[in-house]
Amino acid sequence: MKTLYLDCFSGISGDMFIGALIDAGADPDKLKEELKKLHIEEEYDLKWGNVNKNGITATKFDVLLKVEDSHTHEHHHEHSHSHDHSHEHDHDHGHSHGHSHEHDHDHGHSHGHSHDHDHEHSHSHEHVSHTHEHSHSHGGHTHHHDHDHRSYKDIVHMIEGAGFEDPVQDIALKIFRKIGEAEGRIHGVPLEKVHFHEVGAVDSIIDIVGAAILIHQLGITVIKSSPVPVGKGKIRIDHGIYPVPAPATLEILKGTPLEQSDVRAELTTPTGAAIVSVLAEEFGPIPSIKVESIGYGAGTKTFPDHPNVLRVIIGE
Image (tube, rainbow, N blue to C red; front, side, top):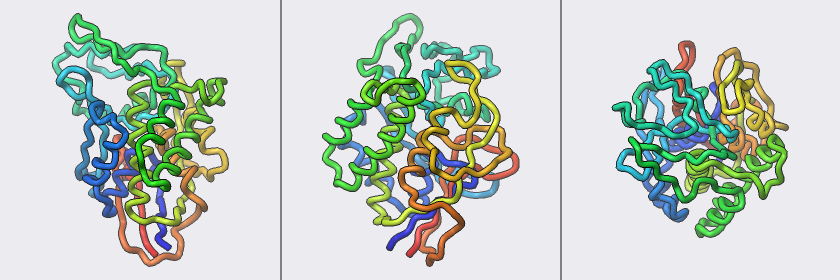
């Protein structure tokens, strides 16, 4: 019985989960190949590598979204909130991104901005159900994307049509359903009417399907987790200032033991919440296992007092 234990002492996001499994020995090149079955590889690039988080070497996994132009947008902000964000990330550098997603890229830095800003909170969001058209106005010419919104049904068809092995497809669909149902409840719409905005959709599809692929690749049969801290404080999204955890995240975590945390940030994203709530069959301290491998997956934010990583332990 190969057991995976998720030690979520700093919360969990989709990219932290994938980073941790790669760090524990999963093969990222095979992951990249498998993900091609979704036929959306023209929309993203994957990047992974080691980073140091407060003294711990961890693997950072990023989904870089491609814009029609040559420059790649580094959307590595644990997107997950699925609620119409036009993200006003009050950045201090003049262009207070209140973008209703028209990232006017005239300001010299092509959106991979290297400032790993500690206000990824406004970032962490799965832009779902946006009405805006993410029209990137690059100096005058506006081009709209064809697939601006992906509905829950579109994503299900994409996963079912990919030809993954059954366990991979089953896990991915279960996790997506969990997010779709939570979004539907929060927004008051039936599951088939739930839409994921393009940016959040690609990111979540990769994180969720990627999680399913790696669990299968590593031959994991049992998954357990620590209780999940969600952080506290507030985040700014389209609808205004919201509490942490965001409503969709909290809805997804029904039935999952939470752990109090004094960190004023969004520690757990909707994608991370869905992964742990669907997969973990029990919650508690590290189980009795013979440890075979350990992995650390880095989050985007950095905190002064603790490493922002997800630790995974794999053993028999």
